[in-house]
Image (cartoon, rainbow, N blue to C red; front, side, top):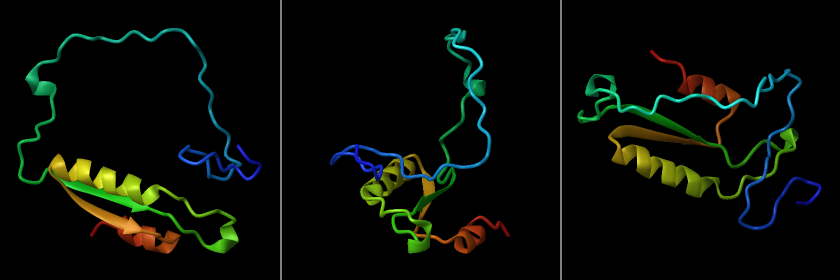
Length: 111
């Protein structure tokens, strides 16, 4: 991986800038018990609706140059794949490309 954080072609790399917000770390590496028994149908989410809801995909590929963030190559393919999956599951999918903070506030303002 190069000094600017870009990996080799075809590899994922972290492009987010570090935050000053403290992160919590996992307190234990002990195994976690999982109940693997099949649950009754009453606990399953039904997908038998014409439209089961809305899926919003934020696809930010290009950033304001003042952020210092590079273009996120490959994000268009990821967004298209996510859109196909959620549409196939019955969601009404909306993709928003290259949104500013103000534009995102509008997207997430429910009226």
